[in-house]
Image 1: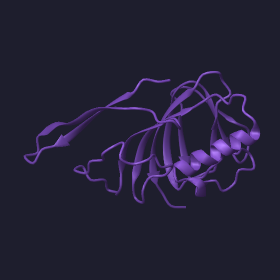
Image 2: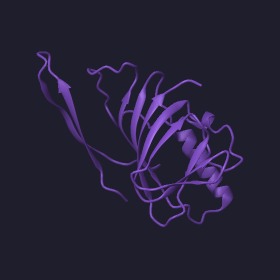
Image 3: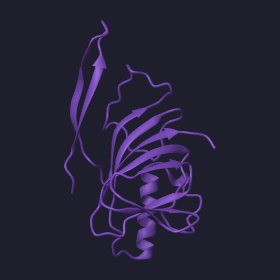
Length: 172
C-alpha cells in the first residue's frame, strides 16, 4: 500500500566524532504501523541502540520510554459491526493494548493510553473522536497533542490517512 521508510541512524564514536550507525528500510506491518525508534528510559541514552523487527509493535512505550511511530488509518469501509469489533479486539491484543480499551461506548476502537502523544497528519483526512463533543476534523499538517485521553481516529474518506507520532510514557 505504501513504500517502506528509510531510517538513517547516526552514532557517536568513542572519540566523539559522528558516524553512520545504520541505513535501513522499515516496512509498515499488517496493522498499519511502522515504529522508527523506541527508548526505554528518560533521559534517553544516546548509546542505546534498538534492533527493529525483533520485537512486536506495542500500543504504549515502555515505562519512562518513548516511541516514534508512523501509522495508517484506513477508510472506515463496509464491514459488519461484529466483524469490526473482533478485528479491533485482535489488533489491541496483538499490540499488548487490550487494557487500554476502558470505555468503548462511543466507538469500539476508543482507547486510553498512559502517554502524551505528539501527532501530525501527513496525508488524507481524519477526525479525532473524543468522549465529549463533535468529531474534530484534522487536516494535513495539523498537529494534535493527545494527553492520556480516550480517543479514536475516524477516516470517513476513501483513501488511507497517514499520521506520524511521538508517544511519551506519562502518568495520570
